[in-house]
Length: 360
Length: 104
Length: 148
Image (tube, rainbow over all chains, first blue to last red; front, side, top):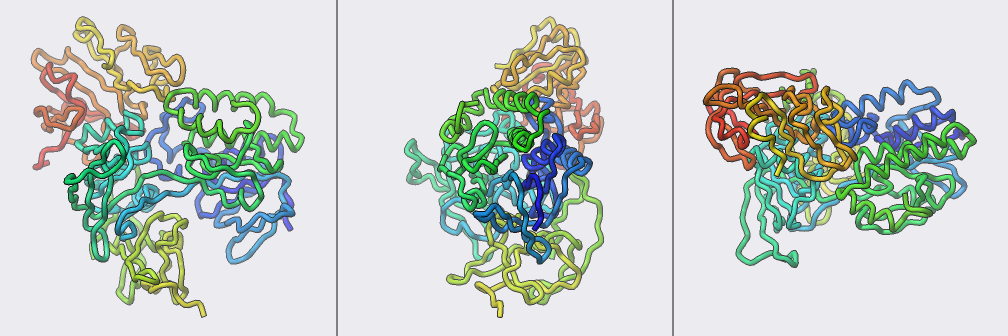
């Protein structure tokens, strides 16, 4: 049995910030990551980030990841396990971790669940053909392994992920046949859409995929225009020959561990699915369990970093560290400022449904 | 088989790496030791990884980070290996899995 | 419509044109400017460029995560203006070569001569394109011609 002050589950931006914030305040942290690399999805983000200097705006995601990982490696008080997947959280507070063909039991005083989110898929005939990918999969192929995912790809979804990954496809030398978006408007930032438009990538709003085609792998899709009631319009079917289809249709929080631990959960569409109820300090209904990042609600990396910091400082405060109050209040203000604009209206609406205590 | 590896990228550096040999359904394929098996197959243009159990539908990569179970293959006789997170080693025998695979 | 500097300023020298018109939380352009010519008062505000303080150095263009800033210089020559665009693709065009000049919709509006290719350590390279004056507010991208 391994005893530790804090167990942080997941080493993406939220987990890394939670670990370094808690350790810097003076507590011992065990940081576990199921993959062999730290940094979460940041390691695939070749674009420059938004936000302010505090969130490393203007730096590429890959550079921010490297920076956060270096800070974690250099911070005293953090033990990091890679290739370590949390298999379960038991009612007595013991956590079982599977690592290198062995199981380890850990009894943390506090936990931060920062397990991120997973890709959603879409329903249409042949949606399971090889050649149909989630957006993260394309980023993994291109930006981690340096492999062209196909020759000609159609993107589905014009939220930020869709328009960002479509641009990354262009950078990898892939032809982007277009971006298909069911809503009448592009949901992602206008500047991302502009980068595609000026390089000739058509964005088809009010369009959807009707079916995919192919025998052993994808060879094309049929798209159709949608009316105001989201129904396909007769006679608007069009075949587009592609060898890849990217579904950037949203993420859903990975919250199995929250369910196991007995946190009170609620389905919130604006946050991507089921999320734990929590307060402004990221504490769930289980007093020793905190949550941060996309697992707390699908948002973006800058919010994940600040939430991780808040969770890390909060567990440190719980464990008796006296020096964290100012930093904690500053982080909460930072997060509110990030979420103040119209681009975050959906997030604010989602949070109002699960925030315990005062709205931050 | 053709090679889909990116040589020059405007943002990232992909240094040339040493290739190792492995097999896909008995045929020789090359890949980089340590990259995921799925990536190595993909670079060689191989996208079809298994057939589903009931309707024998072809399946390939979907999430590529170990969440979705679309990519399960039999590797060195061991079934249900998530090839998208399994690192490639020289000499691996990778096979298209039919259905659920046999453990015993 | 983006706030375009007045004619008088446009003919004084290079100036940055910011085409970021949506309220999103972002301000590295303001941080990057060595002359404090860009203001983003609250993080969700759109940037405002004080054209008279701006000297068209292009640092904001290098740092903008949305690649939404361009530099325009109408003093380049009698017939041509310089349009400087951020460019993050390979291959880079050849200096002195000509490329297809694309507008914001990706339509080819003519040819541009590549005057300079500035490689940036942060990988947002800058292309200096010579175009007819009347296209300076149109040209925002390029396509390499087939032979290149």
